[in-house]
Length: 237
Image 1 (cartoon, rainbow, N blue to C red):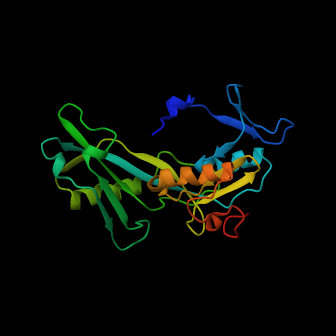
Image 2 (image 1 turned 30 degrees about the vertical axis):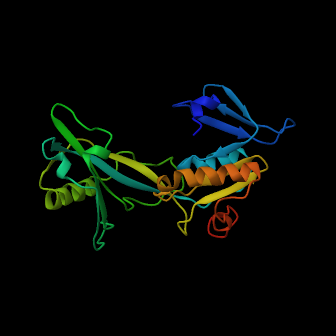
Image 3 (image 1 turned 180 degrees about the horizontal axis):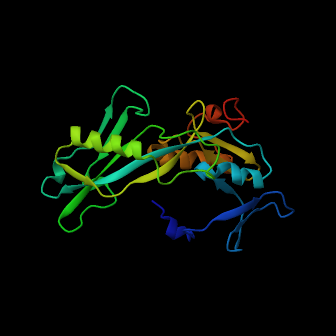
């Protein structure tokens, strides 16, 4: 297996790209960061989730019909002595009002915070929209909904009696397409886009990477990419 570091991959964290240009005499993809740094590449994959359309706009290519969901999750405290008894689980129940029905729990071994002062944490979240669908991130509410947090707290008390208090909470974006299919396509001769992850793209990471590489290299993709076209009726604005 070839590691990215062996290929001298340069990873830039917390670096916001403000414009991308693929129409130039050099035939390169030129990206500019908010710090004024210029990044030049032969090819590029745009994979920026809920911010996709802002990048496509700078490329002068058609916008995609993407909706942004606000989805919540949190960490709950659990005594380390019983943490291993908490399984990974998904609970589907009848939807009602703002309760979309799907709750999940990830055990302490799979959470970002494993142990702190003799305590462990499990991750509990919901897999349904917790507010109005958004067209962009401009009005995204990172605080989330107190009503949804109350639903989560009640679900934990009912189904995970060994779990204690909620210690934090988060709200993050799902980028959704109308048909729930991903977008994997070329939008310029040397630019491919991945978007519309619909909350489950992480499950297909290696396959998605191979698909995006095949688009830019001209190779046969590992799966038929026609259903994921950026030009299909379900995603064109």
